[in-house]
Image (cartoon, rainbow, N blue to C red; front, side, top):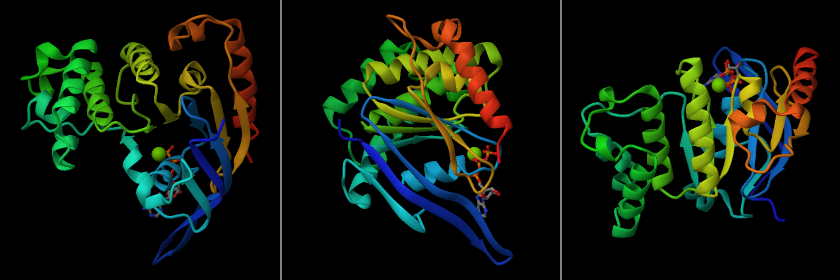
Length: 255
Ligand SMILES: Nc1ncnc2c1ncn2[C@@H]1O[C@H](COP(=O)(O)OP(=O)(O)OP(=O)(O)O)[C@@H](O)[C@H]1O
Ligand SMILES: [Mg+2]
């Protein structure tokens, strides 16, 4: 299968008055459509920088990034970016937050709005359309933020520590929810996380980055022998601990 996303020998440094900070070095990988990639690595190794490069907020100094083999400016419209903070606006209702991206991009067509309605319904937010974000639980806020991102019909979703503000129990159940939404909507996703268990529970492929400047230290394919995979069920599968030990060791021999 042709990759949806292809990075070839990408390097990037931040340049400031005080000097240069090399953030990423020689990153190459392919991501096939419908796959879930998780990126783990020590704090400051360049994970968020990697997502910013992929969505075009930053430009690689060396190497190339292609999405569907398209030039970058065209490809950007196919990417949805969900940050650690949900950035829901308190002065707007849940509904008007969810359609904000469509409003800004002047894409409020009847079929898109209908899809938003269907997602609000499926993901348990219909009764909260007219509520303010502060009236939602942490998990509901994350779902609203995800629906807002999906409303723009991106092909590739970039998720930067999206669950880190949640308490552990909520985090597990929101992770299950969001995984199901992404799979059901047939999206390709990249998740950056500090939580190794979370990475293993959702991913088809894990990139372990080294200390800054981040290089690919190891790429681990993840597969669970089970019929209907969910992150929660994956956690109790026999393979889970093996993957955990393997990647844990890798992170601790981090050069
Ligand atoms: N705008 C910037 N200007 C200068 N240096 C930056 C900038 N953003 C990040 N850096 C530096 O680049 C390196 C990589 O940062 P990045 O945010 O990508 O790391 P990260 O892996 O996402 O870290 P964390 O796990 O803590 O979120 C860090 O050393 C950081 O200090
Ligand atoms: Mg980061």
